Length: 111
Length: 112
Image 1 (cartoon, rainbow over the protein chains, first blue to last red):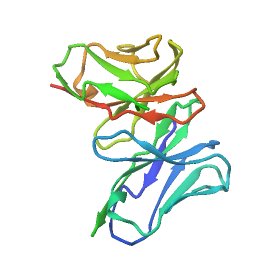
Image 2 (image 1 turned 120 degrees about the horizontal axis):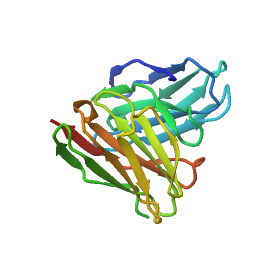
Image 3 (image 1 turned 30 degrees about the horizontal axis):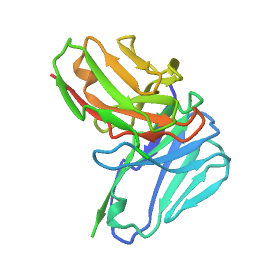
C-alpha cells in the first residue's frame, strides 16, 4: 500500500522557535491534509491542500503542497506550549475520505 | 451542535473474545469511517459506511465488520480478538464522503 514518510519523528524545541516538518509519498496525489492529535483526542484537521505548489496558512501554521505532488511541508511559527502534540500528514488514497496517515511528528515545546 | 462521540472510552478484553465499539456521528453526517491507531503509529483506515452501506474497506481481515444505522450512528465489531488488535479505534464522520471528516476521541481497546 501507499507509504507516507514523515520527518522528523520527534522534535523538542524552545518556546518561540519556528518548526518545520515534512512528508513524502511514493506516488502522486491531489490532496494533502495536515492533522494535529492531542493526548486522549482524535486528530483535528489543520490545513488541506488541493493544488501543486499551493501555500496555505492557518494562523501561525503554513503548509505547502510540493510541486512534484509527492511531498508537503508544515511550518509553525513562534511556537507556544499548546502546539505540543502529534502532527500527521494524510492523503486521501482511497477517494472520499479514505485516508492514509503518516507516522507522525511528535512536537514537544520547552518553556 | 454535538460532535462525534464514541463508547466505551476504554475496554479490556481477552484473546478470542468479541467486541463491539459504538460511534455517534455529528448531526446530519451520513458518512462514517473507522480507523485503527496502534501505539506510536498513525491511524489506519478500516472501512467506511455511507447511508448504511459499506463504502470502501482497508486492509483488514473479515473478522472486522461494521454496521451503520438509519440515524447514521455506527458500530465496529471485531471477532476472535488477537493481541495485535490492541489499539485506539477512531471513528470519523462527515457530511458526505467529500467533506471534512471530524474525529471522535476514540475507544482504547486492550487485548490480554
